Amino acid sequence: MKKYFRKDTFSLIEKEYTMNYSYLKNFLVKLTNDQNLAEDVVQEVFSRLLKEPEKILEVQYIKSWLVSVSKNILIDHYRKKKPHLLDEVDLMENLLEDHLTPEKITMRKEIFDNVLSNISKEEKTIFLAKEYYGYKYEEISSLMGLPISTIKSRLFRVRKKILSTLERGESIE
Image (cartoon, rainbow, N blue to C red; front, side, top):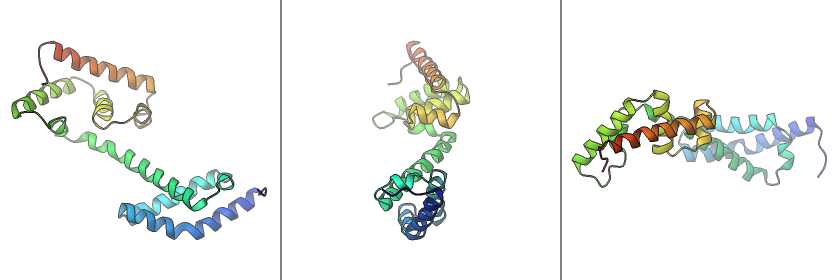
């Protein structure tokens, strides 16, 4: 492959931007139904490319690579947006209720409400992000700005509180 100078690399990025902007934007609009979000994602793709211009020289199929990066940025966007759901008041009503009677659902909700009301907001966020939303430790760590070891230890403490509540004779099922 021909060695490009940095100036040539930026020209190549500009050329790819001109050639692929409309395609990427239309692709993302079809996925999101949001014109502004699609434009933001395309801009993010190319701004990342401008931060590391050498990447364009490593890629063999630029269009498919741009689509892949766009999808990943879109997924990241939705993952970052998802934690706002943790503030919902009736979140626990929907937790594992598919096979329970109304009485058991009420008992379960009371136990979880009791346990969750006795922990900090940070611990509650960590617990719900891991157990309810299925986030990975690394994702929770980056969302909360805490080390992974702290996330794991706080999650362990919350689980331990739940188990101690259950061991006192209260039953979730």
